[in-house]
Length: 399
Image (cartoon, rainbow, N blue to C red; front, top):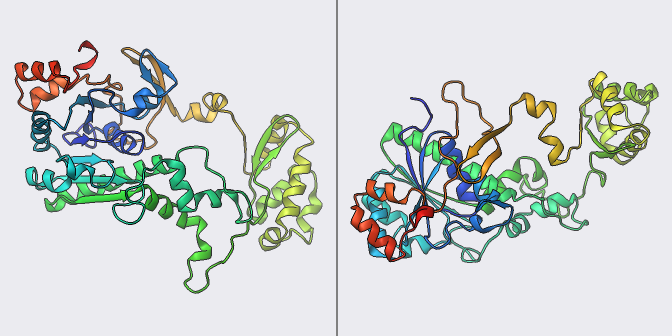
């Protein structure tokens, strides 16, 4: 075996971010992912800005190692081609609004009738049932409903704030890919497939609970109002920029005191213990800020690192790409795309010693693999040409 999921075929009916993230993680790990798109426009992310040579960065960054098949599933012939592929598949992933997959004939029941051990995955925004199930959903709405925006605010008295990245979408992709891996392992042991349902809302609430829901953990002792430990975050101004410093233990506090040339802080009655440093957090963080304003970022990093104080520079995205630690990790890869030119992307975070990930297939043009995949599904060249002529499929950029 040269890759983790060699021989596993996934039919990807998803668009936007959560579903494509799910399937790209598995594609990077060796799965044969067939991305099924509408022949007119394909995945909506193909249309968004930041583009080169007809390819958008958003599409490119979520769809490598996949083959693109265009099908108008409203047509019986295209639906029959999809059904033929279902019989060869291990996993189906869709993120239609609840009820749509069943209505168009690609729901879990219909697919399981064709392949009884299929792993069928339904990703929704708010859930399969309930008052919000049929609402249109985007990432900010999930951040709002899940409580994430008020967690981000720091306190119930502060204005709610969005996390400035589409965390619910991407987090759901990671959760779904892990669930699919677990279901494949279960099927390997038992021979049984199953239906996996997960929503962006449930994913974020589960994610928050580990660190942000302590006031609602003990039944009967719930907080009626969330108050921030401090209204000061751990990003500090220096003389020429910003730095993050985070100190927890007594040892780290003593190290910080030495870096500040303020040994008296160790015995300061406000800060002698972790509990006191927590009680007097605003005083401690204000003091830290005033000291850090006196030197440059470079000076402080050198002094803090010499005393083993947890710290890091605050980097812009262009600076992050060339930071020595990012380069040492070999985090960012580059490769050639046949039309969009040289691409830069983050490598998959897990590194496997025996089954390394790789870019086998660059992000595909719309319908790029339609002809070969329909041939695999048993269609003749005449049938494929007829469907293309009727606009029910798109045969890549040559059509």
